[in-house]
Amino acid sequence: MSFVTETARRIPVFREVDVLVVGGGPTGIMAAAAAARQGLSSLLIERSGFLGGAGTAGGLSTFCGLHSNVHGEHVRTVGGMVPELLDRIDKLGGLRRPHLSFADRIMAQAYDIPAYRLAADQLVLASGAEILFHTFAVGLLMKDDAHIDAVIVETKEGRFALRARFVIDASGDADVAYWSGAEFEKSPPNEMLYPSTMFRINNVDGARAGAAWKTLPQMMDAAVAAGREPFPRRGAIVRPQRDDIEWRANATQLRTPEGLALDGTRIEDLSAGEIQGRQQAQEVFEFIRDNHAGFERSYIVDIGPEIGIRETRRIVGAYQLTEEDVLGGVDFDDAIGINGWPVEAHVDGNVEIRWPHGDAPRGYSQLPYRIMVAPAVSNLLVGGRGASMTHGGHSAARVSGPCFAMGHAAGVAAAIALEDGVSAASVDIAKLQSRLAEQEAILEVKEDMKESVDK
Ligand SMILES: Cc1cc2nc3c(=O)[nH]c(=O)nc-3n(C[C@H](O)[C@H](O)[C@H](O)COP(=O)(O)OP(=O)(O)OC[C@H]3O[C@@H](n4cnc5c(N)ncnc54)[C@H](O)[C@@H]3O)c2cc1C
Image (cartoon, rainbow, N blue to C red; front, side):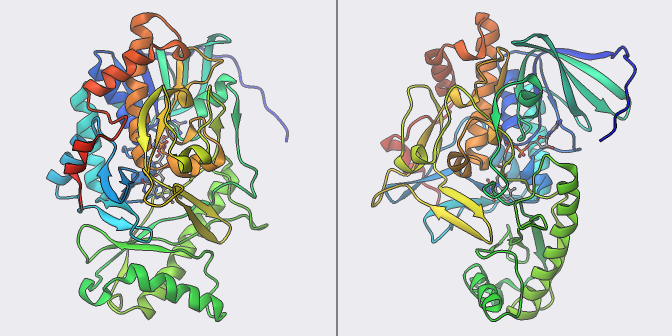
């Protein structure tokens, strides 16, 4: 690669805030709102023109990880501002009752994407936080090795600096942590979770489609086995949205010419993936339309605005959440939330689900605060899918529910760090847990919660 040299230039400081949150996915939404509700000036920046992260930009339309299967009972195990978010989506007419997923073992909940975008705007703005859309963080200025001074952003108006006393990296790719020099890891391309392009189908005759979520994957697998179709993966997830007229399809898998997972931090991979994903969406859709009852008059109403990236950089924090923690239902002294979603590994050509050990297990593990702490940087927390988890731990705790929980905790922890004048690593855990409990975060499942089962 050849190089050019950029001339040094003065960068205007566009905002000076207490807390800057980079990335408006589930983690960033809750982090920005939580910090603002603690009385801090809180700024959320997002490179797109809407919130929701992969949940909207990736076209997902289902919340996973809001519930746990606790000894056979389905309990909502993410609290904090999540009920308020669900309520706002519901008031917009955009929420379906939770449904059972993956062999009926765990609950998930479908939502309409525009309603989620609207509700997320409302929740964040009601908290007092400010949002800047179309603002792409591209680098950092450090005060010294351990302190971030400002985040550099590119916008249509040009380059700005956003100065913050504390930064929460909710970019999903741990961008800020990466620029700060914090330690991170990335699975090798033959192990990284494969990305997918999501799409939705409209004008489905729901009555005739029936339980197509069971029959379609079998039909697709049979077509591949018979050599009639080259679908890229087994385990297609196809489900109705709020109304049975509209269905979502999570059925594609994006790979390099060598068959490896595309890398969501490389522009050539991202570009090839967008094209490949839309092509696969068309092929899968045409099979569904031409082969399954109820889909004859259907059409693709939307393809995710961008490909869905499941895994890229993960920081190596003060602790790494492991697959064994998830499957063993491990508790932590510094718990800040709960994850009840199983390991959902999008491996080459398939989706593997691994469940907590034992018969009728407790069904969840706690999320330790330390997975958000990048020890070398004192005014930074990294939440969501960029947090400190092994590949296996991440394969479970990367879904929306635990990301909401991490974001909430990161916003409150930032406030405590600033109030007490301590680093992220030295936040008083008892204080954090008691504030989270006051704000109805769920750190453990109690008997009386089983009354509030959504079935
Ligand atoms: C195909 C696919 C299907 C999935 N299905 C489900 C599902 O059904 N249910 C579920 O709950 N989870 C699902 N997941 C997982 C889940 O959506 C994500 O893991 C989750 O959204 C991660 O949340 P996050 O806040 O860490 O990051 P993200 O949701 O990735 O949000 C990060 C945000 O930061 C922004 N951003 C990134 N870099 C910058 C930057 N430098 N400057 C400014 N903004 C930036 C992005 O635009 C994005 O909005 C799926 C994931 C994929 C890829």
